[in-house]
Every structure is written in structure tokens, then in C-alpha cells.
Length: 235
Ligand SMILES: Nc1ncnc2c1ncn2[C@@H]1O[C@H](COP(=O)(O)OP(=O)(O)O)[C@@H](O)[C@H]1O
Ligand SMILES: [Mg+2]
Image (cartoon, rainbow, N blue to C red; front, side):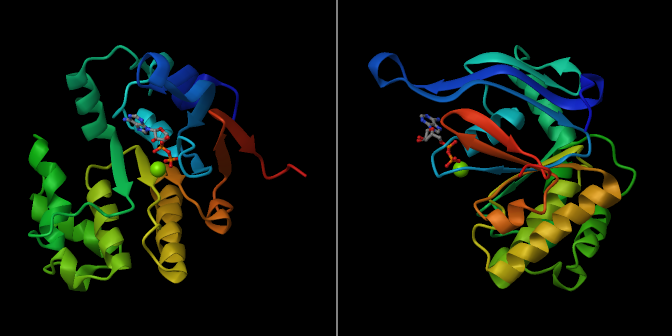
């Protein structure tokens, strides 16, 4: 990590998020600053309702903050059009969710190939690329199964393969191990950290699990609308 923001993937300056109007308005994030660098591994922790998903959705260009400035890969995305945001999301970001979000009627292979339906260029067929990704996450033997025929851990691997097929710069995962037992949870985090080492993909992972959070180089707590970062060197 360095303080030179030219190597930054994300720069957040004075970001606030409020929901509702007037008397019912609720401030979730208050004037936060955060810089994430390419290749960072970052765990987001915090109590339920503290704003972890809100922060992740802002990073994922899914939610616009109420105020503040957000730069992504050197561009000011604060005022970008919904079409531009969708384009950057599709090109640069892989999402992983607690509940896997796979399409139940499609095989693992077709779930993984799906994001390529929205892309133009094809050097290899989407199914060949999907096969390659499923092999990389250790699921070569299950490619024709539907989600219901897979274990929770296997479903999350399919979701990871689907996130990877677009070769994202960044993976955002919202409680990816929330529905998994401890052993599967460890394996999934291991897999994600391995991707960071192999492909230098930047990882931002929301987790409740303190022991899993400790595996990440950066740990940021969302507390009272603020971000509190603990470094490995803190007492
Ligand atoms: N779209 C929304 N409209 C209104 N309130 C919301 C919306 N999204 C989240 N909230 C509220 O913001 C707070 C933080 O939510 P969230 O970011 O999902 O927390 P966490 O992921 O840490 O559990 C919660 O009180 C939640 O009810
Ligand atoms: Mg959440």
C-alpha cells in the first residue's frame, strides 16, 4: 500500500449515504474517505445494519452515494450515466453473494457462461471459457449439474467461476460464506485469496467471521457510519 493515489483502483472522498426524506431520513455512511489499491485484499466487517452492503454497493457502482466523490480506475464516476456505470460494472467487476444467485434451471456450465452473453468479442466459445473457469475452481466433474444438485460450497464455486469469466479487475463479495459451514467457508476464502495471488484481482469481502477477516491484508470496520481500519501492526 502507498499513499500515491495514481495506483488506486478506488478513491472515495467525503462519501455519505442517506436513505429516506425529512423526519424519516437515516444517515448510513457519514463523510467517509477510503482508497483501495489494485491488488488489495480487504475485509469489511461490522454489526448487522451498520452499512457494509451499502458500502459494497457503492463500490460496485450499483448505488449512487447521496454526496461525495467516487473515482474508479482514474475516472470520476460520481456523475456518470447509468449506461456508463453498467458498462464499467460489466467490464471490471465480479459480484459474489451470500445466496449464490445462480439461475436454478441452468447447468453450472450455462450459469458460468451467462455473463458472456452481454459481451461482444469472442475468441473462444462461451462454453469453452466457462469450462476453463469451472476447472479452475475445482468443479470439472460437476459442469452439467444444476444448482440444486450441488452442495452450498460447490454452488459458491460456480458463482466464483461466473464472477471470473469476465476477467474482472475487482471482486466484490457480500458475505460469501454466510450460508456455508466453517470448512467450506475456509475453502472459499482460500480460493478467493488464491485468485488475488495468481491474477492480482482486487478483493473486497464482507464477512461476519473475525477469523476469516484476519486472512485479509486490510480490515475495515463500518461503525456508526464511519470506517475504522485496523492494521496488522496495531497493538
Ligand atoms: N435502499 C434502502 N432504503 C432504505 N434503507 C436502506 C436501504 N438499504 C439499506 N438500508 C438501511 O441501511 C442500513 C444499513 O444497511 P446495510 O448496508 O444492508 O447493512 P449491513 O450490510 O451492514 O447489514 C440498514 O438500517 C438498512 O435497513
Ligand atoms: Mg449486508
